[in-house]
Length: 538
Image (cartoon, rainbow, N blue to C red):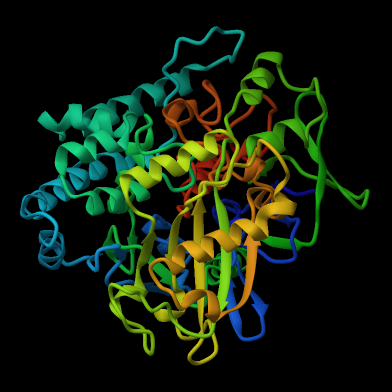
């Protein structure tokens, strides 16, 4: 008999397992794949090439988790990037952005002296708002909606905690002062109008707008996209605020470090094990049934899977309250993301910034391909009608330009995060067209770095359908559910159940389907464990 079985050895599941085990719980983690880490994995797809198959950068991981799990001791090391962003233009110019504000201003002044003057104020505004909101990531959202008693019976203690949490958030927001209207717009509004008010140069606006649409099926002109702008000043990699970095050895090194830490705390981890059903007896968890037919008895289950998998696949229909089932069925998993991993014989040689013999500044950060505001909107226009974008928007990183352990000498890995590739196609299917679409993406990069197509040695193309199959991400959504305003904070995964608990006693959500959502953060797992410990060992 286990105190808790955790479904899925993704980073949130491992964080949750560690927190419980440290308090004396007997914890078992079951992972369907043969390796731990969820989307944080490194695989040697081709001899000598170690690829971060899915997740490829880190910044949002809570420093509390790094310290509590002693990740550095278990081999976790972040390699910061400088510069962090490179946007090639078609007129011979380019934009490099990094942690040095003065250098950023010099770069931006090529296109607009006004924008160069505005940029520090823009960054300061984002940072001020982010610092006020960051504590909310580590708190259980308060349920303050006047939901009927038939939806959920809430006791006095929870009402008191929720009121206290809401008060602390209210006090934190006071620090925003006269920027509160801007904060509200950032949390709920579209990114593009905000960027248009701050800046006039298209290359700067497009570079920032690209960051606002990562993992979404929305254009930067859509409400809700501004929230993602905050992410570039949240978190820290290597101790620097807002600096996204590579994990040495690939993202799998993070998953491995977390697994090692969890095991050291007493967690048992089994891989290659598929959970077929969550067993319930009298509206209370009793165990899990595996694909082998074996059953494992447990007093509680924490699911690192998304809400669709947890509630609509692993639990028999009719077990949950009808109102809860309907709410779960309405969760939006819209996605238009594709991941392409490429092994190349040489670095991209950009027309606007020549050089491919050794890694240059333009190779170290995120490279924005197709970054004009109009092209982003037109790329979305294709996708909203079920067509892969004719001119895809690509974020390309070259981790081997910073981490020399990933590829043979002189050769490199290109990691391409592509939008828009809609999960639901108007015609055809992804298995038939994904290679042709990947060709389109490579040719798109060739518009800026003509040597790339001939340098390709190997490639792996992961369509939205592949992301669903391999990583159990419904609809290929990398956040375990889209993140518009109505699916955030105390409405994630559904209103009334944002505290990681579910209508089944002993069943919890500990993954990105819960608050605060997607990203390699670990907050979902840590917060879920806190609530489980508060409830006490079942």
